[in-house]
Length: 397
Image (cartoon, rainbow, N blue to C red; front, side, top):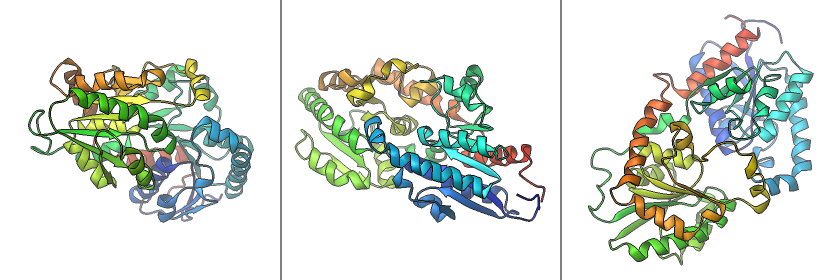
């Protein structure tokens, strides 16, 4: 591209799933907000949010949004064909920057091949692959084609440095911007023992998670209720497209939950919640920021379980990883059973060491994740611009 300082800046973004679409849309807004004197044009692959911000998407993001090892294998030929379409489109556009967002099994091979065919294009990786957890050798390989990694977890820059990865900066987790919505106002969360127990149950945001966790969660609730003498208000925040299936699955639970939908209703439930039984995932960090002690569980397929020896960390719970301490109990695979889950839940619904340890850990989270006055999306936008400038792709206006 020419170095005309008045031309629009061309940014190519590639997101492979819903969370990436949300990050991409925020980044697009931040680029415009933090550099209002420049016009931006956005091409790439994204969902509805990114398209509303002006992205011209090569095809529907849903065509490659596949979770789990077995489904990916089944759809691999189509995914590979679409990846090569994206690569060709990036090279044809010769953008001022390529931003790949999460979904590393899809986006990393694209970045590697784009660098080989068009090394003049700066490549920014938004959301670090979990090189600190498994396949650490990926970090060193990424250094050959990634200009900068924008990390959501505060410990990731040090991990990349230790593993020989590319330059990496902590930009802040997007949940930081939603702390006010998650944290209860004075009097909004009742003390334990003052009225019914406000219990949250979150069996996952994907159909595969729901189907694997529904039975052990139901069994755990049944056992828990046997020894709980008080009243329980059970709330289940649900993704809209899963709500009908959740309603069907939970209608015979020992306590039929109140199913709520939408971000506002979910945050309100978190602000009231006194304890939770949750699937591992981003929701556990939301609960921690809200100050809700929890028991975390997860199950994967038998094929995926065979890969567990590759995991290099002692926890899969985000808050535990950020705190560097396993304050939240987790029950994986065979341990994800009604008895252990119920026992752990009993330990956190009354004052005592288990509950106190979690609350003390949560009190340290804000400081551990803090990035000052700059919003995560603004910091990410600034680093994208700085990377472009370092590679000569951001002419002075």
